[in-house]
Image (cartoon, rainbow, N blue to C red; front, side, top):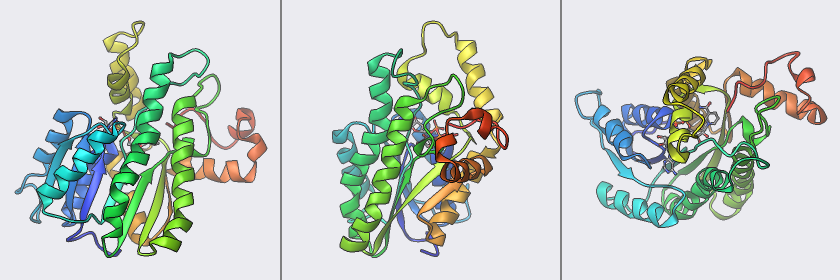
Length: 292
Ligand SMILES: NC(=O)c1ccc[n+]([C@@H]2O[C@H](COP(=O)([O-])OP(=O)(O)OC[C@H]3O[C@@H](n4cnc5c(N)ncnc54)[C@H](O)[C@@H]3O)[C@@H](O)[C@H]2O)c1
């Protein structure tokens, strides 16, 4: 796929961060986009930002409210977008929506763990169920699932367990890799990519706190500071990350690492699997704890 012009793309989690930047860059390249988000205001803002006059090409971007962890809502989103775009297929699906939370399996509430897992895994699964038949109807379809460095390294560093998120992101990576041969065998004009970002500057901390509800022991100021600290200390912006994703999709890559931290972790974990959680060994070349 050399160009996205004239295609129809679906972007989940399009109200913020990498999702919003994917919408902007796809639209700027002449691609029609149906973006969804669980947050109605943020996805509406994404569409407003794209309104004709703000870009040099005619745009067709629609915003939809959908919680990807609820299959009924995903199916409604699918029907809504086909109707809105007068389409019978889609060409690209970016399963990007995700949240953090449920760090400790030992101490954290079960519902927080399961909400994170449901968004990050079941959301990707329901979107694949809903949209793969529509990608198969495209002459050339691409499913782009966002995992994380935590899809191959299940930690954030010493003392920071990351169980629900990592479990879901490993599932996303495993599912995406397993689809490679399935698609090659059964739908060779469709391919799958798995995106593994390192630390990218977005409001994911605030959006995750919104999804779970701010813990009683955390003040509003502390929550805002934690979000700003995560966002502002990132080596890459959401726009830079979206460009890397889209360049990767165009190049035909199936695994898209984002950032030097992701590249380091990927190389380290494959070179020294038994040392993956030996932070002293790892920190000789890299400071862990900065990736989501
Ligand atoms: N930012 C990072 O450092 C980083 C690193 C690795 C992976 N990721 C992954 O990248 C993806 C995008 O994250 P981001 O950093 O841009 O975060 P973000 O919070 O800026 O954007 C994610 C969007 O998804 C939406 N969302 C959350 N739950 C949803 C649901 N159930 N249904 C529909 N929409 C939902 C949020 O409202 C938000 O608008 C996520 O899957 C995340 O896990 C992020």
